[in-house]
Structure formats: C-alpha cells, structure tokens
Length: 594
Image 1 (cartoon, one colour):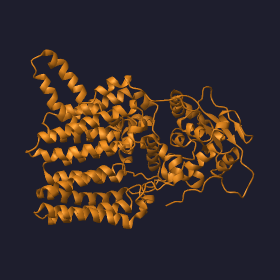
Image 2 (tube, helix red, strand yellow; image 1 turned 30 degrees about the vertical axis):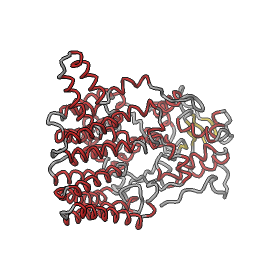
Image 3 (cartoon, one colour; image 1 turned 120 degrees about the vertical axis):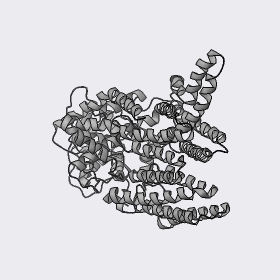
Image 4 (cartoon, rainbow, N blue to C red; image 1 turned 120 degrees about the horizontal axis):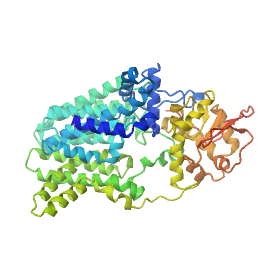
C-alpha cells in the first residue's frame, strides 16, 4: 500500500509541479494556513493564533483553528530548506497534503481487509482514486486541515470494523479526539461513531470493552488536544472549536460510556435503558450549561449570515446545485450505501455482520449529510469506498465466470465502471451545467477573474508600494497577505464578522459611507478585482451602490487612480482621508464579540 501511495504521490507532484513553483494556493483557507505557519515560525506565540495583517488597524482578528495541522508543514519547511532554499516553502506545501493521504489509504485498506478479503485493498485504492471530491483534499498545495480530518475519519471506520474490541475502541476514540482537536467539521461523524459503538454494546454485551476503551481515549485524547493545541482565543466558552464547551461534552460523554460499560447488565433492555439515560444526560447537560451553543456554532448575527455565510456555495445542500455538480458527488455515496447494505445481508450469521452493519449505518449517515451541506461530499465519497468495494468484489467475478467472452470482457468492465462510480466521469460531459449568465458577465468571466486575481504575477505588482492597508474584497484578503507585503482588512472567517460586514456595507452603500468605513480601518488604498465572484453579490444587492458606480466609471474625487502594469486584472486607487468627524461608521451595528 505504501508503494501504491508513493506512486500516487509522485504522479501528483509531477503533475502539479508548475502550481507548486508558483505557489498557487487556490483556496482562501490554504493561504491562511500558510500565513499561520509563517507567523509561528517567525516568532509568534504557540497559543497566539491572531492574524495581525488582516484588519491591523483594529488589532487583527482571531481564528478558530488549531496549530496541529501547522506541524507537518513547518517540519517539511525546516527539512527542505537546506536543500531547496527559498523554494522549501513551496515544496513543503506541495508534499504536506500527501501525508494524510497515506493514513487515509491505511484506514480504508484495513477496513476492507477485515471485512471483505485480505487482497481486496488494491480494489479499494482504485475506487478511492475515482473519488474526485475526496482526492481534491489531498492534492499538492491543499494544505488546510481537511485532509487530516478525512484521514482521522478513515481510521475511525477501520476501528469500527476491527474485530479486536479494545484496539478498535481505542482507534475510534483517538481518531475522534484528533479530528476534534483540529476543528469541529467532523463532529457529526464523531458523534455517529460514538452512537454506533454504544448501539453495538446494547445489542451485544461483549462489546463493553470496545465502548469503555473508546470512552477513555475520547475523553483523554480530547483533554490532551485541548491542553496542547487550544489557542488563547479558544479558552473561552465559544461553540466553534474545541473550547471548554466541547471539551466538557467529550469528557463527560467518555466518562459516562466508561461507567455504563463497567456496569454492563446482562439484560439487553437494561443496557438500552442505561444508554438512553447516558445520552439524555449529555444532551440535557449541554442544553443547560451551554444554551448559547444550541444554534449555529459560528454564533454569527442574522445580518452576517444573510450577507455572507448563507451564500457560501459549500454550505448549500446538494439538491440546490446544478446536476453537473451534484451528480458526480452523489453517485458513489449511493453505490456505497447499496454495497454496504448488501454486504451486511450477505454477512448475516457471521462475525463480520456487526462490522458491516456499523459501516452501513455510517455510510448512510454520510450520504444523508449531503442533503444538509454539499461540503460533506469528500467524506461521503470516502466512506462509500468499503461498500462499493464489497459490491465490486461480488459483481465483477460473477461476470468473469460467464461462458460468453462478451460478458467476461465487456460485462466485467462495465460492471466495474458502474459499481466503482467511475462511469460518472464518462456521462458528465452530457449533463446540463445549470449555469446562467450573471450580472456583469457570464460564469466564464467570473471564473477568469477569480483565477487572474489570485495569480502571483498579478499580485506581486503590488509590492512596488510600501506596506499599506488595502481595502479589498473579503475573499481577496488571505491571498493578498500571503503573496504581497501589503495588509488587508477582511477574510472569509466568521470571527472576522465585523470586517466582513464593513466590506459589504462599503461596496453596497453610498460612496460617502464607503469613505467613512475605509477611514475607520485606516485603509490607504482601494483594490478591486472586477467580475470576481464576490462582486456579483454587490451588484445584485445594490445595483446603484458604490461598487456598481466604480464599474460604471463614476469615481469619487477622494479616489486617485494608481497605475498598474499592463493587463493587470486589478483596479487600484489611493484613498484620501476624510475630514475629521465625530460620526460613527455608517452601517448596521457591529456584531458583538463573544
């Protein structure tokens, strides 16, 4: 398997070497992750995750992340620097995402070996490579924490399938604690894994050892993760990270599972009653002690949710996306659910039935998560691999045993393409995209602007000016501070809610209001990327707002155009400070800090 992983890693690095050379960190989170690593290696405190280059006039802003995913990136930079010099950072960002891929492959290989056959793992690896949403999270330069959380999820599945109860419980508990230390994105999956382990104990008393070890490792691992990696800003009762809120839940939940496992009455109904009491106690305690966390964990205002958070495409359910986007994401989860269900039925009466029942529940839960948010796609596809592999392990040999050479050759190939989900790529070109022309240009124009304004060569032209504060779009902030020496104002992170709203108020309000907002952030320049996806919101909400006027050539006198290189995708103006005034910044009240 490690040889297989090494070949995939080599292909990835060769295929993406140009992107690595130019440090094409396409996602805002990847840029912010690198800035977090740079700050730490530059002397910023281990527990200080405040970014001081976004909204510096107001002291920067805290982010809800943890330092845990920073460690492999920083280690690779230190290892490669003696050999690659200034390019060490680029190649560290290229190699780092491939490390959790090895753990993911290990978890899936263990799962199918335990449940299907010792030699089924290569088939699972081939199916994994067809999981486009999943594999994107391991591509070079995808350095944010999602790959590590998927790796923890893969090991969780391996723990659920482990016939050795203590080892399986420890694997699930440690993997869940590791994932929660990084972030809460996988919290629903961690909760589902705990529920499955508890249900197994209710059904079979012998599973008490698995549940007890799971409870101890979950509680202890979460406590250790909090002590080592929780930032200063996460020491308070917030709901969006492993703070004292969720630490209390994990310690209490793990302790209760250990205690009821010690009791473990012989009667199944008694075990059901104990499990129900433990679950009710956790839910009631959470509602009583942390009522502020019963809503959205981000704790954002309604205005911020409607203006920004609800418009994030990844946060929409899969049925609200075009068929061309939704179909390739949903195909494998559907196949995985069918395969895991069939495998559970075929394993009835054997020891593997409990493991397959757990996988079937987990896979179904992951597929249902797509109906909540499409960002569940990578996890749903990965969790579908064991079920799809089990289905292929039965269907393809059936065709290979047929007497007709046509069925043996074409039937087996067609069967594999279908049960592996790889056929989705063949039909994708024939599906409707569902895209429509938007304000200020069609989707192609928006995509071109997004790409052009993230390009290093375009951004580096801004280094010709002394370090200043550039007022720009929310999504431009992380890339701006990563590539240039300039400071920004906002980034797409909910703890940066005040600055996010200020940016939207500025571009959708009047020129006079925009000037006051920029002055409040002590911005020296205004940087605009025409037709960037975020700008479509400005136009749709305020057809006569400040941004729309800029694009029509109505430039207020307090903006002085600044020349940029030919073919630059940006427009840049020097901002003249307004006359001193005692008035507050126009716009809605700012979101109070928690």
